[in-house]
Length: 602
Image (cartoon, rainbow, N blue to C red; front, side, top):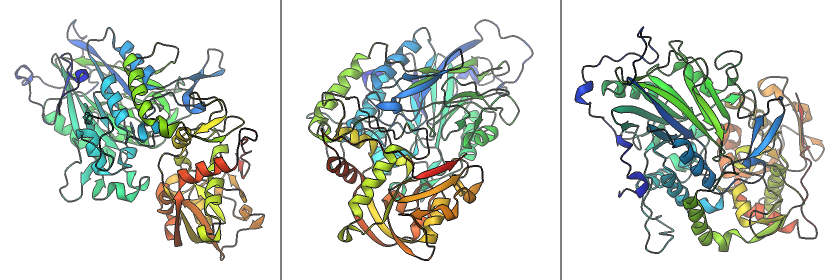
């Protein structure tokens, strides 16, 4: 693949696969990361490598709207402030500014760069985002679960280039060139060959400094993506895979290693500048990444993580007890992490003995800074192509309707979406649905009252609706018994979802109490579940609408896989836009629902 101008850099380069050892380094004795040699590094022996990282960009080339486009910041007096952030124009500018004065700088990401993207990127199968990543100087990324939304063949195309097999080339005379950076899929292998789908690792080199990057996605990817997208692939344990390739790199003389992991944690605070090493290292963070961090080999010097869309910069001790940075930069390009890796030229390893606090800091991608001109041009070019579709008005709202940015288990926008799905499928000839359920992860944004373009405040465009519902999942209506429906509700807060509950958004008429003071399935108060005021009958059959992902058991809702008499309705996006059009106008805009269908006891 021809290199883009941005990739023709002499100061830093990437080599894929096995690295050839430098002759001068063959006899050097490597020490484990953080080993104390007993003497101070001499001038010139160590060099600081700047690692810039981000995650879960999800094609947000333009600044995200509403609360989805803000980060929470703790002020010196303890109060909290919402700061607008994100957008490719500002992310590129932030990274370029951060690199100044750092001759050794590498930029990495931890997956979900694409998928669930706004219309500007999603309409074109995320080619605009890959182009933007090339321009802003991304060096390497792990693959995330959303990179599989359109299947393995499409992920391979994003890496290698070529026009879309169905939609073709979008610009006359231009062929999509693919990613100028490697997607790493160390723990994703072909079931038949056993080989990784793409490269498992890469080595960054600059003036004798070598740092290996291993990329993995969460082992549970098959549970949260459509089965067709991962057919023929196997997902392996994150820790075992990272440890395996850390040994491979070690044998090649690469002693400095960074793991890019699309799996994350949950800090005790939603503020990006929360000190998650208080009172002790890693005490302020929980979730899957904590267990992973404690078991990944000490050969790995830093963990860049993602998936949970949270912000943290912690030190979690490795298996040998030494501190190691574990970071995540929220989502949508609202933050970037700046980590200092002190490289010892003699041992070829990262020095970690003196780490007392995170050697990493999260920075806001501030929208008050100048915009990167090349990103402005890129956005304008693709917006011109998208305009005939994106700018069409589909509804009107009286105020912001919180979805992704809601701080409560039930969101106002979640109620709107589930009501829309019920309305689209309740007629006898259209499925006969009695209620609808929506997975929270499928609500990707808010609906903002303030205009994003020239459409006017309160106007909802097709592009904005697409940003909220970008998957275009088909709606299914299935038969479920009351017992099966209750089991599904219990799976919100038990099994794989117990540690991090996934609260379904419910249509009007379905009510129940969620008691979070209890544990597991007991959190759903059985006698409180009612439909139109009538208690749920375990033996009765109900017609339930949901998207095809949820109906297939996605997100840990295995109970829904047993649904019978399936009816396939319109897409979730068509149901959503149709509802907005039918229930709003300029004179009578849609008001945000109260979000009072689920009573939560804390």
